Length: 315
Ligand code: A2P
Image 1 (cartoon, rainbow, N blue to C red):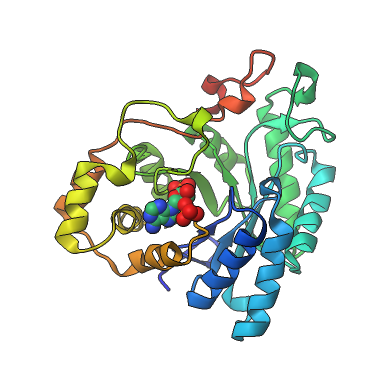
Image 2: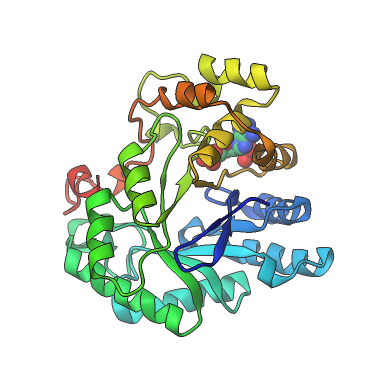
């Protein structure tokens, strides 16, 4: 499995399995099959509401397939209602319990957005805590303690825009190993890519296939589905690979980790196969030129009229 070195010298497998929107038996079977066929990186979050089943599948796979825990790279995330420093350790411990692990390979701040502790999804203004960059740095200090305690091997962030990542880098003791962001040919994130490379922060691409399974309410724009785009189809015919493999190989060629979600055994295999595909410079450039700044998961669900957060604050 292709791996990248993180800024703390640990490694992360370049292809991981995303688990957002995977439910019930299908997430259990997907994680079990993925580990059987060679995935070693599973991306999780408590808010996906499936960590217990992911944990069960990891537990069963370790026993059934003779995989060693050390070979695995399991990430989870801090939900928006647990940013207060005193809530960080209980949040890590909850994920550890659900996943049946005694350490996480990576723990990420899920969003730079804060809710009251008793609120999972805000429905009125007082459910939010106001945006506050200083408090975010306090959350980070609590994340750093989790590394010192041995509960997390690496820590990082998700959905941090460039200026916020820069601010964190200038105030932290342990630099974030990863920024996990939406990244695909329709949202190529060029500035972030260059900044992250310069500062040794690995980018993990979520929705790397252009999120074909996203909920209808976040469908927008007139661009065709990424996997149906004529440029992607043309390249996939040229190199006899599937459209998904072309798009994932593009992500890998730009030195990003990719975490495509699938609960379908043949697609799991297909997506892992992207590791063996190389694209020419011309093909990479043709795919990169598809960018239309199309952000599907723009966090507008945190920017209701009554919210103190806005798209301008996020991006
Ligand atoms: P499924 O789970 O039924 O395979 P993303 O990671 O960009 O959000 O994409 C996930 C979506 O893409 C899911 O709906 C998933 O459906 C689908 N998907 C995953 N792998 C492939 C593939 N190789 N070809 C087409 N669609 C895929």
